[in-house]
Image 1: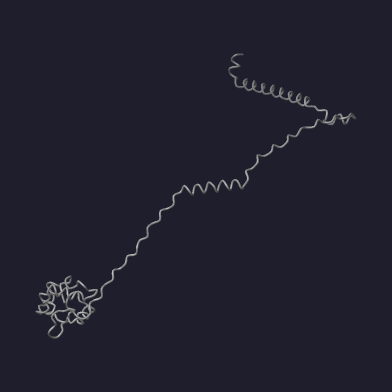
Image 2: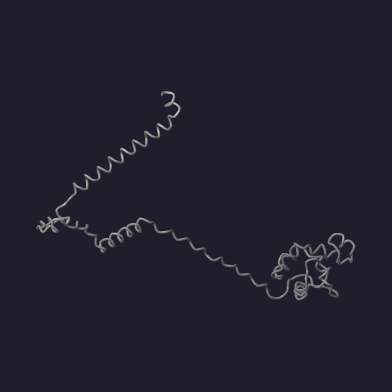
Length: 203
């Protein structure tokens, strides 16, 4: 017998579970029937069918609705928001205005003096002053109008002559010294083209 049980223990376990489940189902079904009979009410219509008076049902008390909390008036809320905004504006410091830059006034350029510079006049036919490096057509015309027409005239200038002529050169002021006119004029006055080109480049 023990050998039979140990060999078929799985079948016995299944049979045991089926038996337990069947017993539980039978117990549950009997519980439902008793609950249905307990809930029998005189108002289910059976007494009415038998001709007996049906007792009136007891009135069910309906709970009164709970009053909703009173909402804050819109005007009060708007006033509170405006007060908070005004307080925030008062707390915020006003931005410091940036100082405006004063417009830079261009210094007026003094017009060249009237007349011609007080220098030694040119003697002889005019030279082509445009051979001097830095002298273009406009400057050449200006020099001719001032009475400066020859290389030997420029080659003899001293510091005071440069200062005298410079004030008549308008926007070309300073070009005499910067471009080395006097040294160039010395080569050109002697017609030393080779010496000029070695120092200042091709004409």
